[in-house]
Length: 168
Image (cartoon, rainbow, N blue to C red; front, top):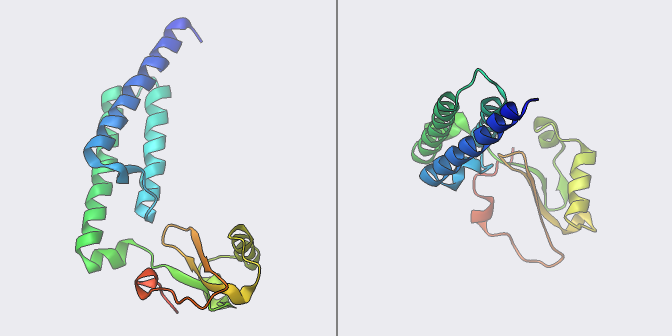
């Protein structure tokens, strides 16, 4: 690598990074949120665009900026449509699923979500669960994350927290 090539890469990094910060300020922090599969796909696409803009000699900063703008604009449009339309929400997002409820494993949902028993048990250990009977609910979120709600008291979970979670 020549000094000139290194300087080109360094200046490209600074320029595309500045453009990314500008777009994030314009479109908001949701740009990098992992709230849906669309957000996840957008984040991967943004990373790919950043890398190709920096490292590919045939990719100009203008092309990279336009591609970033298009991805972030599409993500913003999709998130708006999901918020405003039940049809789009149903088409474009996954519903959270119960993997456990009231200490009982829901095997059918483990299969449906492609989660192994070992994965579930690992998440329970990660959440510091000591007894299955203390697990109020385990939810496979629409983002692919697994949430564990547990405690050894008789406190009920507010209905709103489990809103939209598919029981099966």
